[in-house]
Length: 183
Image 1 (tube, rainbow, N blue to C red):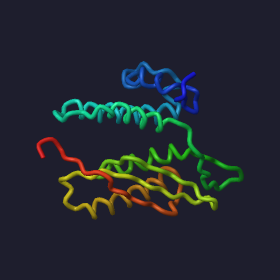
Image 2: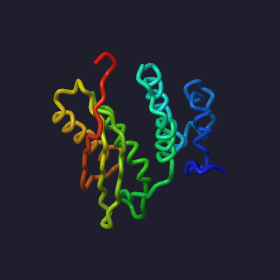
Image 3: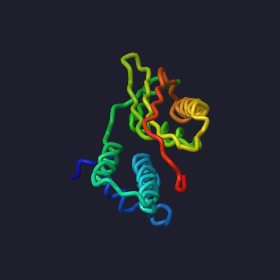
Image 4: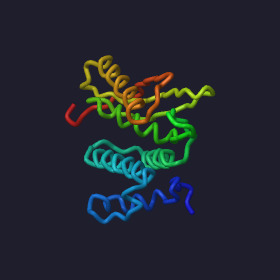
């Protein structure tokens, strides 16, 4: 057993090995229906795309980059705390903070010139949810304030529409600026 087992008991390595099975029509029933495998697959596809972009760049790659990337991947798939969702019926529904973070990072990534880096979801004692989202902004993004306002709008809307949460607090932190090839 590995240290990187998904809640559905599949290893991240299994998901990586079968990454293209879904698109090729070779996926098994579990791969088609499991939300944990789907979330891991989406993250791994994003990682593969980012890695491909890095591979075509002429920049020298820092020696520790591979370790940092793998640490980030492993951190993404670890089980995290659960967030209780409001329900109209008696009983409860929970979603992992990791799943909430994935939805919110995806929403931030839809803003042109912005890349979500890290998303930390904190459940408060009263059941409220606070989010800290770290971003990288493109050098060509001359309207940084407007882009961040749009990120805030999309992340807040995704929390409500896709997850069913109203955020008590959303902190946006820009910790990097990136350039496009040729800039």
